[in-house]
Image (cartoon, rainbow over all chains, first blue to last red; front, side):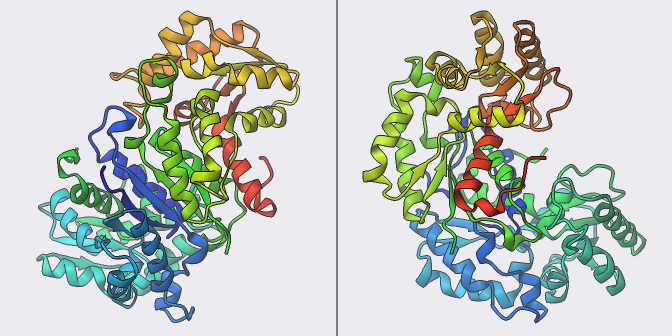
Length: 254
Length: 254
């Protein structure tokens, strides 16, 4: 019996669903029974906001509750799992999760979303050198993408701080029009601000843009007419989870 | 801490995701942390096809593997769960699941999708009396909808057997164009055959149509321009799961 793929969900809840949808889409299957087993624990109520912790507005490290979910997944027999939240991969959170795994979730291995996203950039846009990034403040300031892109010989292109704070961050978090409060359908205002941010990255020389926040994967579920190719970190993680669980079942890239 | 809502998923895998999406949509929430916890175990590979069992083509009762999943959910602390598969509610399967719960999944209560769908009909189309049904052969032949609709004073309208077998069933199961093999996007041929079936039900006097197979909920995710109001059993189950878990958080019907 195949061990289920584990998803530490709820971060946010729509992002977790989208990750599982992308796992299904990445799997060779003609009938229900061909699909790989997936355990999604979408415990949004238990995991504090990651950016709020990194920015110092919330005292509790989300690593603790994430480890609780990982422990539940390990008890279900999960050996490979992912967290569909880019910001949770900032070292202040992710390193503490990884440190706790051997004791709390023995046998469970967490893939690294950002590592996989950067590998995916090379597959999707092999000729691009200047790579734009759309993400939360927590992700920008942690530098988790920059360090990996540079290591891969790529040049990170980020928005200026006005664009990050007044546009990208609010398109994700604003209680009145942001994606977290209005995920389906995403509001025109949020989409408009994200389009502005993509234009801004293009003007700064980006040849492609990483959707480096899983809420943005939800917003650009159907990529539509972006002026730049979009590389979706959620798809990268989904494909990596299939590859690590049943490599022969991974569909080739379209 | 709220007990997670349990979903016995994988039947089919997209239907399980849609159920969780509908749970999110039915919940009053402005930020991630407002959502109710959900545990989705999407173990499609372990649960044999329900219609194949009911029709005598497959020897193993899916009740056994469904109970295994219920047992896992109970260990996660789940007290209320649902199965997003109409056919699994045929007595030959469902009664055996319910009988095994006290021993295998103590403390876990399964809602009944068909009961909830029929209650939902009265809320959605209170004036309709003749209610059409789109479903699998397993669901049609088990009579699970008919008996409940009649008890509620409603008249079930089903397709003739040619339409059931040559259209509705194949739109769901055909390996070349059916929804299970091609869920995203659903093929034009499958949608065409389902539209034909809705016209056929309208011609037989139906005033509304129950989407009585969770694959059909996937196909009609955006109801589009159906000539008759569609009542979605997946939405009924989602709302019932929220109601039984946190009634104050259930959004009113739009």
